[in-house]
Length: 90
Image 1 (tube, rainbow, N blue to C red):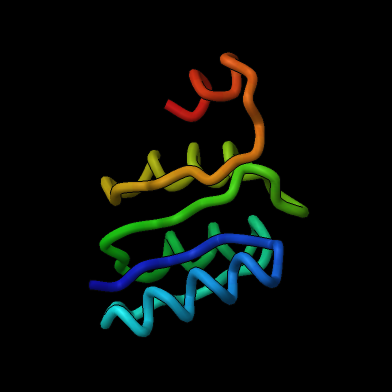
Image 2 (cartoon, rainbow, N blue to C red):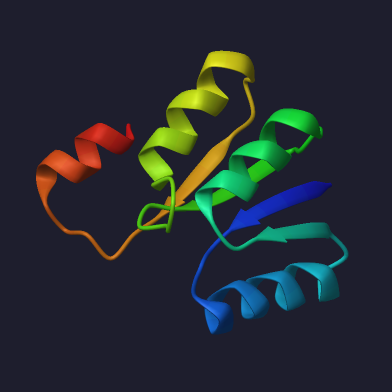
């Protein structure tokens, strides 16, 4: 299974990539929304783990662009707790 992680926080991104790799998954890591969008649209992933608060292009915009082109499952990561943010992610 090939997984894309889009996470700008180095410790979190590295931890996720290491853990998924050790579990036998192929994991790519993008550090901002622009790179994450590019990878998600140009490669075939089985899953995308996407942070909401990213530099350059936020996770909601990446989600929208990916959804226009692919049916890949996406798990959103966020520290936001507002109901509007949760609904927007759905």
